[in-house]
Length: 352
Image (cartoon, rainbow, N blue to C red; front, side, top):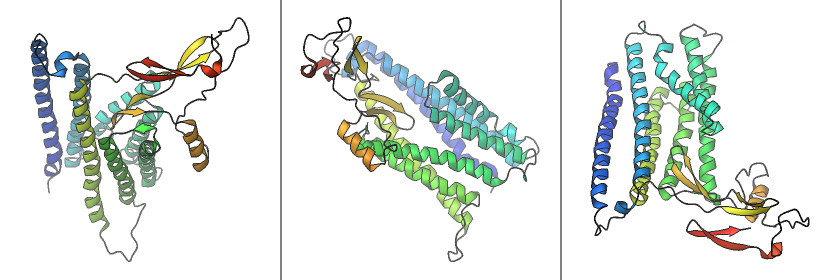
């Protein structure tokens, strides 16, 4: 089988993504034009005609630019990989990795310098960079004895283990009530977790870390060929569920961010907002709502999960201190009778 036949499905998928971007841009332009016209009509019944569509435009452009750049970078890498497999002497493995070098350095720098993403994101991209570096030293510079194949496999398994642990943390957080996943997000989390565990097994088998017993007379290469598409299919189907859920949310809310009430706490300098319910954007999950655990649930989990394992944020104690000094902030009512509720952001938020 020639190599271009192997890469043909991937290249066809990139062409499909380009067509989807073109159709999405045309649909977005048509929507903005119709919204500008319908907004002038008093008899319009579509709620999107009364909603500011700038957040929807921002989210659409952000998603389009991200997917477009990632698609282009992966396409260039596939072309370079095809050239290297077809004619190994033309380019080295380091030159084949050029698009991935740029991508990993940008994400690592974004996490370390700009600090716009979680620390684990930078660790994941650092492990990807390490695996590529070890493979280049082993292949291009002949360090086969210095860098055995097991080193690269260990780095990849560590990468997948971090991803699997994060997925378990998110799904388990939904089970105990911290994360508020939708049905699509929860199903996608199960598919992601299954895919990551199978990916660990796949990498271990490809790196000769796992061998089948002699009683099992199966071709290991055949198992790898069957297992690899299953891993990709599970992750892809989970991403499809999340994308469909995000699309429905865009149509329902027009890209508007949810308004979350914040809790207040009385301190010496007055009322101070504290961490409470909110929403966070998690890669491959979209916008996920969260709510700190109550005190009883946090104490129960600290016992069941041996204390340090319960790493989900919990609500702070509602008991208020009483300040006796005259120069401190004084409440007109006793502290024990100050618990009330306030209407803020369209819903009730406890003031403690």
